[in-house]
Length: 126
Image (cartoon, rainbow, N blue to C red; front, side, top):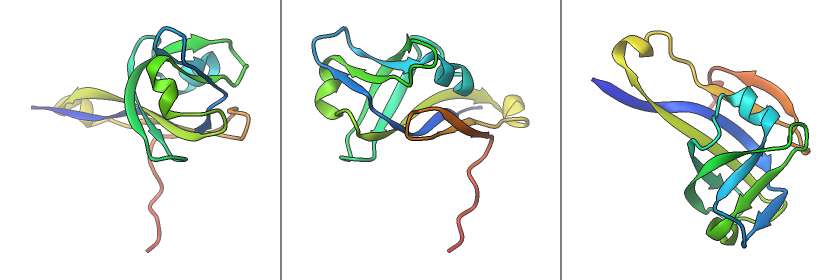
């Protein structure tokens, strides 16, 4: 059996640009791609915390250290600069791969610089 699991997450990054007249994609600072393991041209899901929109696109590389998170093309109607979003990528894993499975969870500051990386989501107290 194979199971689709969260591969990587960029948690609460800030949208810096929304470019309607641009070939569709999401430009992501190369530092964030590297930290998360998200590959250029990989399908990603975007969850807009600010307005509730959810949509799929693909990642492209933005300049390293720029902090850029640019929502491009038609998706630019679903996010605006300043919005807080979650970017997620998923993978399909075999039972054997799941024995050592941990997602790459990346947490950032207000300028989209990496603050922390984790392999699990901490348990929330009720």
